[in-house]
Length: 316
Image 1 (tube, rainbow, N blue to C red):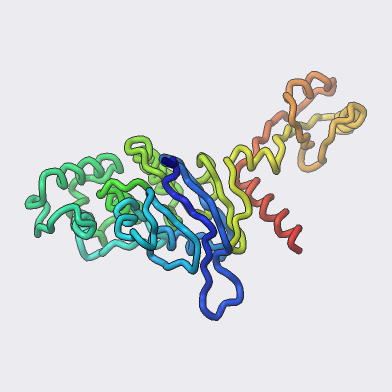
Image 2 (cartoon, helix red, strand yellow):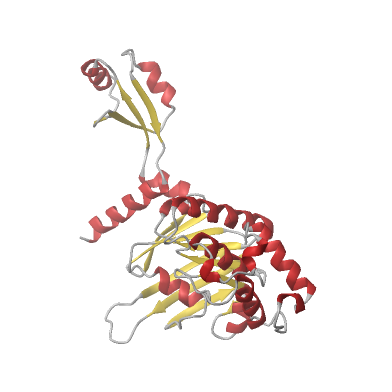
């Protein structure tokens, strides 16, 4: 019995008339309950991959299983196990928020359709109220037309809709595109709460690399191929060093001292000292009085850009 809720083996996607493969023989897996980030530049194959995994696009070859179900032979079962928040909003703005959720639940075969919320079964009504509380949607807003809701509120509604059938995997394709900083932060707060509460696997594609900082694993796709898969920490450690940023009123004295101690450094606005051992050991060797002391921890975005730059240099 595997712990993997997503298994992709030798996946290929080609389009008629194109000489290059859109997806070129990729393989990866995602464990149950994992926060998995699928990153890459524009045109790398992210949206194509997520479209295949969510059964909205056919593959050319390869094998894909979601929650143990084959996407070709058991596509209806796969759809019952996944929730999707698309890159572009897919709500019917003429309907109320609750009507969007109700139609979704009935399309998934969870309930027989009833013309009003109050006529729906009690367990449906309880689930709607529970999810509204989790994502902080006001009860009154549920019964307003979607067109009257803010962009952030509509995104929360899409989360509610995608979770109404209690999926095993929630696919997020650029979920915060078009949202302001406050709405982005709020949305992620609710996504994390939902993950903790329901144990749902999160599969994320995003151009906001900071959103993947807390992922369990990151997979980078480039030109249709998997370039690397690892934890954010291992990716950062393999490409970048933590840096000390220091300076002194007597900069010449500090530079001379660093040179004599054979400590590597870079002169920029301040003096940058990459290091792998304890910064305290470096400070203990310095006698020059420091006027600036900072520690710069590399972010996932730094590692992501560095990785792609090195990859492009090798291929050039």
